[in-house]
Image (cartoon, rainbow, N blue to C red; front, side, top):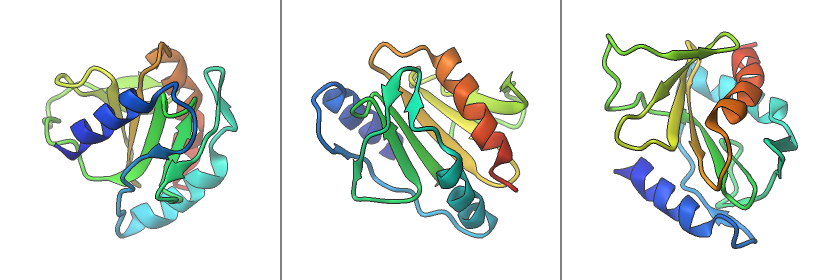
Length: 140
């Protein structure tokens, strides 16, 4: 339910300009260090969209293109993800595509789950390919 709310807020605000409201996750254990590292690896622009700001400010959230693309690091395991689900592998990172929310993807790593919402006419394949490098390096 929380992810659906975040998605609706992001899509409603995409293209409106200004700060984007995104609920920050609360990572625990090894995910904290991994997400802190990921924050230093994320690009200034993504699929042609410039990095923006989110409110409340959090090292575990990044947005691009006025919220058209949003990343949250340290989220819980996706509720809809079954142990037998196939992940889409992009540049060595497995991504779970949520069947109920076509704009929501989650990177499945040993260190942390990284949720990415993609809207505003951006190509999921391009966005995930660009993010797979930093996500793959976040564990150190």
